[in-house]
Length: 193
Image 1 (cartoon, helix red, strand yellow):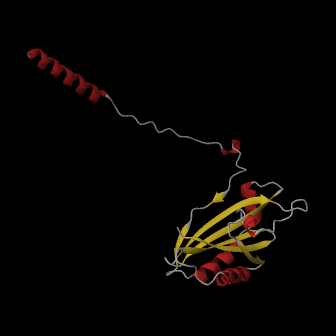
Image 2 (image 1 turned 120 degrees about the vertical axis):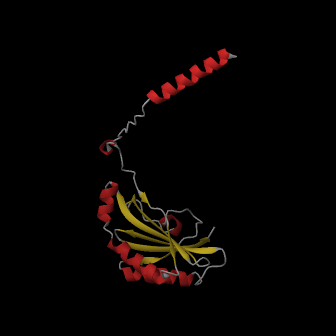
Image 3 (image 1 turned 90 degrees about the horizontal axis):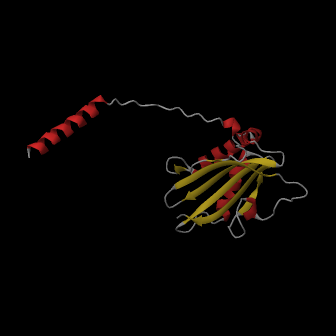
């Protein structure tokens, strides 16, 4: 029995000596990434959605501000930032999903590039295809604009043409896309889910 106690003391003594003699050294490794060697040509910005309380910020003011903002952005800088080739055209897009039941709007901004229209690849007349969707997605084009006032008017006209307020569980989904040739406004009704 004394042997077990003796070995127990030795074991605890060794653990104590080892624990007290070790020093904690933290090596803060620095990692650097050389971005010049990376191909960032496919990089695009798809910003996280922002939820806007329509009790605090009216839908009319929001639409007016977005209409001005989309006109103020420089598409040439977008093309430079995304490193778009000559066959690509930059665009800026705002998606605004309005949930009247919750009295909120969900705003998502995006900038990217699309294949530039030429005589060989005519611009699609299908509204679903114009807004990156497929046939049956429900997009309807409500016109093209050159000025910010026109964009706001087109969005409000789209809401009126879609019935003023959607049915229960439905939201209005507005897309405003600015290309070099102007701004296009599309809208559809979607499930709020």
